Image 1 (cartoon, helix red, strand yellow):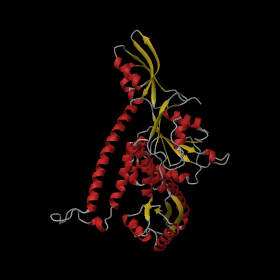
Image 2: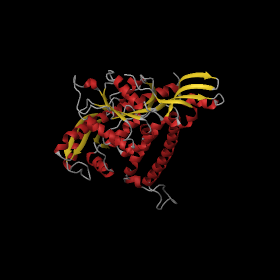
Image 3: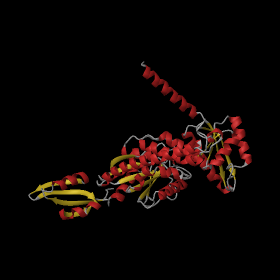
Image 4: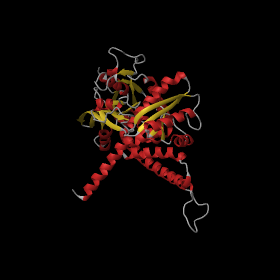
Length: 444
């Protein structure tokens, strides 16, 4: 073994040791709800927080809920609950306490001082999971942007952190505090990150514009985290994407081309899942990635119908879609995990032409889903019969690049083509049109 390999093994061992240590962190969850009628919803939210904590590598040992009309401005929970949390820290040797709502900088500082334990809120927990899941450069940039945006207003100087920079003769005076320097550095880093993300976003828009020039519609999977989007993506594409019961297992978007039973092609995009109380800064930071949702031609809203709270989860997704100005896009509701429902049941609200009950894991209902997708997309293209003169070689080349040639024959005065093109391209081809008709409907 070489010295370099030895160092690499040691480094890898340290990394695994750190990950193991992080996975062993013992946590308590805490939350508030305004009245007794909201307790069930608060318990459901805390259960989701527990899943988030486990996805981040924590081990949940205790949960605390408090009924309060309004959170305490100093510590979020009341004085008695703070003492209860402090006692739990001592008896269970807790490493951290996670709150189900976003804490103000003052609340977080006061809680840490009084419990002598690390305090996180829901936003920090989600950002930590995102930092673990990000694989692409764009994903890592977006996570760092969200983390620094969250951190900036929470920089609090204490003790020596507020001391003036420099020491000795010639350095006395107002100067710049450590806190001010930290803020300035973070602002500079934020500006750099935004420029980098804009650059990546420009590249993504260029790729998207190339796709838009080809008559292949884009269909985006959206839905609550752990609703089964990646399983459905694999079932429709056979792409072998990561499937996991952990929340936010998919962070970076995946795109694959799919041919439907009626031979219509589409590009299917798998995107990051949504959750309740998804912070605005996270949505803003991931706007470049979520543009795939906004620029798609059709949405497949995947809903975990086996969850008792599937309607609330669907509403949370619709709220994020409104924030992305994608709420009016054509959409199909895909009620997933039918295999987990009692035999013969079809929960109320699943009827209608805009939804289909499926099981991405077993394949139940997928043919019906593909038929619905084909019906929604059949007006995306027009099938034309064109006669292109032989001296228009450039047009022939463009049709091969941007259209789908269905048939071709050579005549004395030009090439006779049967081609599918986007409706937006029909106007520029009208002088060559022999006849036009919509793409054929799907065969059931």
